[in-house]
Image (cartoon, rainbow, N blue to C red):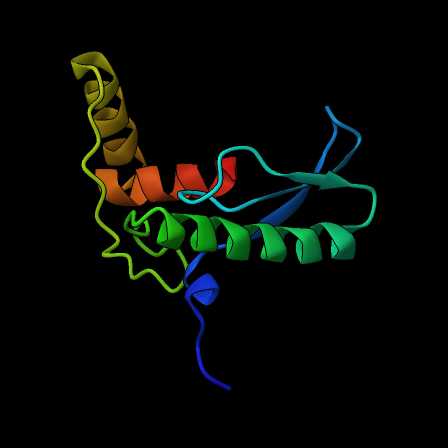
Length: 112
């Protein structure tokens, strides 16, 4: 089975407490999303919406956005924070015997 253009785009289906249904999105390709009560149906509809969006872009002669599936990440993030927060993080990291990077990574893991 060959790879199709629609395989290059991340498709996310998640429950929305606000909408009380599943919401399917394709970041970077589709603005908005697909909604429904069945996770599988939303995913199937989302796949079709991604295919249609790609067809429309091709028909209009517009380039496809950068692929979002199978994207490689370097693990590096340039982060701008206030000097006071930087100082607070540095002190906390020092007190716990770890680097600022390790402290931030740990805190981010705990947050998600």
